[in-house]
Image (tube, rainbow over all chains, first blue to last red; front, side):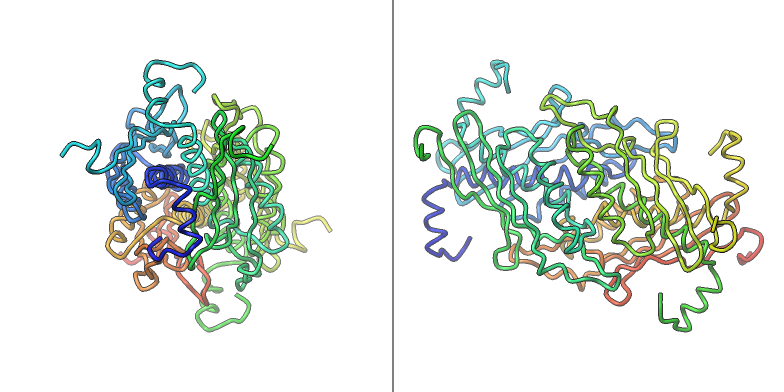
Length: 130
Length: 130
Length: 130
Length: 130
């Protein structure tokens, strides 16, 4: 998005930085969900997996912060003593930034559904505490 | 999102329907990318796979339209005569709707990167042709 | 595996065709499980998804037959009316062949675990009906 | 496989422990390939990801040893400075055991294909060095 072609310029008119930050946050939540669901995990290995997911997501463009928690209470061991990452295990918060606009979004269970939602959006120098 | 609790109401104040439509479109693009990358595919099986991806995405909330094309020209057969779905093969357009707001977003290659972008946003009864 | 280098020859001594057929069947079962788990699905879309999985697996080397069934009874709709493919939904049978040796293997639920097992192995011209 | 039903007994006659060890090794190789392909990765994050894959695979039944290497030389940064795990990056060795039979298998590139093969099989107390 660095070099502004006319097409990009038009797009920039159509969407605000705040909207782009929202867009980028949601991409990452959707992506991590489907990348990691099904991974074998146990209470003992969960912390390493959380770190690996965080390190993977933070590589992606516009990501400022990411925290991943996997709900150990849902890791009921199967007959072989492990579980698989399920959608309802995810407690994720992500902050994306596009220029001066920030979006904080979340993936966590709500009514037995792995729910993704926008938590808040801020413009640097405006609503954010200094 | 049907029954409005106070928490939801506050959220509704913070984000517009247009922003929610953007958020939902991006979730689906991020999700489908990581769900389907790596799937064995050939030029002969590509059409069925496109249909299966479309049928899978359309199930998800807020999705109005989805079209998936997989670039056959990138399906160079390996030594066993098939390929795997790669990020650059995707040509996807999705339309999401939250109440009267629509977002059209796209996943397609740009500078050798599988690029996701907002194409346009519309409010029904306002910018859309009648 | 067509052109036999000395290294391959040694390997051929170490493992029988029957063992190679077993090896190849298991690769495909492990692969399809993790490729497709998490895919959004409904009773209405299940048949198309089954076909797409079959068409994808049959592309891979040594696969002679593949049948995929997804257990509709486990597709309990979530709050948005769809499900995601879960390990216990799979009823898969695959037949692989390495030269004259066949392996039939299966993925299906057993004691609430998505169980993969060898069903039978045959040598063409020996145990198989003509 | 603990409680032997008549069906299991028959199966035990049909397949040797060595064959079962081969079967289990291949399941894990196929599974890990499709679970982790597509994960965002960089040279800096690769080691953590390797450890996470190892910890995930070792949880699964019959796995005695697992080592995962991801080829940094293939991690060409995209326009945003990262890569995604590709099939050809994998250098994996796994050892499975069923009772006294061991199978060592490998996933590594061969002729530009992510090749899975049996390296050796041993019976404890027979071919293995003491």
